[in-house]
Image (cartoon, rainbow, N blue to C red; front, side, top):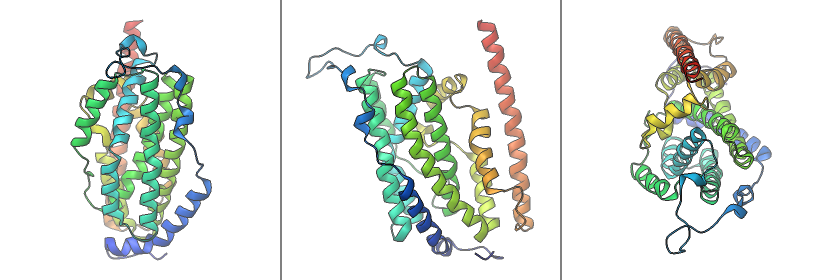
Amino acid sequence: MSLTSEPTSTKNLLMELEPVVAAELDRHLSVAREWFPHQYVPWSRGRDFDGPMDGEAWSLEHSTVAPAAREALVVNLLTEDNLPGYHREISTIFGRDGAWGTWVDRWTAEENRHGIVIRDYLTVTRAVDPVALERARMRHMQGGYQADHGTKMLHGLAYVAFQELATRVSHRNTGSLSGDPVCERMLARVAADENLHMLFYRNTLAAALELAPDQTMRAITDVVTTFQMPGHTIDGFLRKSVAIANAGIYDLRVHLDDVLTPILRQWRVFELESLRDDGNRVREELAEFLQRLGTTANRFLERRAQQAAQRS
């Protein structure tokens, strides 16, 4: 790959990245493991609900999942539910032709399993109120989804690289703190998919850094400095995210140490020698933001520790 001295058009970048996408797609298909959502659901725990089946109405006492993990499971599921919107957005950004299109459809098919298995688990185990969950799904999906950076290809690629890893980490930590080994096993299986998806996007963007380093650095910095999870429009998201952060499932320190830093290190963004003046200035902007984020994350941990000490 040769470095460009002038901005490269989105169309040209898509074409130049096509062989990389094809190779990453082949790699993904060679390591992705087939699995079946129904095998991760404890069906023997299920019983009829109220309504046409004249069963028992849901009650909070039915749930054995830790409260913060319950909040995280709802957020994670409602996020997965918006898959039609994500499919539309990435199809618009990456196109439906060639290796790009094949990947988009494969990714969508794999992601669909996540919503299936989480919802089945939550319903069968009565972990959450199914009526409230369905109403929340309707509201959230009717709100639609629109990518924060529109149809900018490099921004979209950078965003999904970070977002897939963030989702993997969130699922893993939710399972670990759920108090239910079945839930932990299920979310570990989902997280394994998310990790493979992250690798696809991370490796593809690494190639973009070689082809168009300054443009890609701009995209990375824009995404990192404005990052928010795709479920941020869920009703009550702020309250839920505070509970999730206070439990240590996903907070600023986790975001910095387990999501941003590993990917940026893999891309060697602070070692690149191919950047021009504009790219170097953008990289400095990124470094300053990460430093501020680290300070804010430390303050949050200190406050959380103080609050825990006061409660004990």
